[in-house]
Length: 293
Image 1 (cartoon, helix red, strand yellow):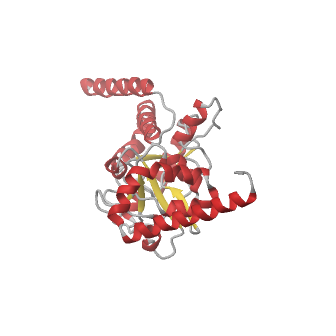
Image 2: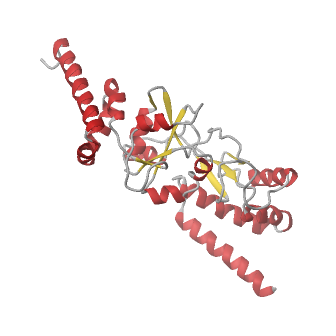
Image 3: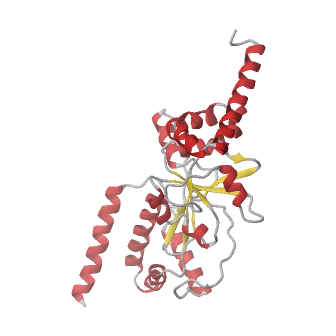
């Protein structure tokens, strides 16, 4: 009987009515709904992936923190859409171990500086769920750690002196040749405010969680190299620019360490043993130089 057209239609109608009932309860009794959400959100998320027919209704029932809410306060995708800036067509989100970690990471600061809201998701399954959701009410869901996001220019009020156009071109060219085997390319970007460098996942590349799931199922994940963006106002990057002209070997060690940490923050595959070894070699090189001085 479960395979009959009538039962399938009843299933569809009853499910839709119940989801609309939950949506009404969420609006009328938000405190009671939050208790329900805390207990059963994993089933809502499972439904988003497993039931495309009801995906939008289920997504509307999700609750999460965001850069426009206070600590401990939750919001919804409908509320996010209502707060979107004029002309904004994307819902930006980040997945991380917690709100504090996301807010202190390099991926968020460019959006905060522009007053763009970012939704915060903190459960391991969220990456998988949001990759499957893709859009909500015509607005595309976009991970803020992806390449290809076009952010508006900020007023030139950033702290620190910027590299000249000639210095920037020279540094970017040298970094691209030095890191050619590690990343897809290096660019001077406008994502960063306080961090020196960030690694961005290509738009169509599987994220770290998806690659881990594919590996667990014995599937080979497609090779993906991150795109690096550098902050040409950051003191480390300005120092690296001058260093690569006078001490190329030392500059290459610094660039490698910065890249490794950026890739690690992006969830890309990096050998922590090699990072540790490289850091020790770099510190020894710097301390050795100081002793000679």
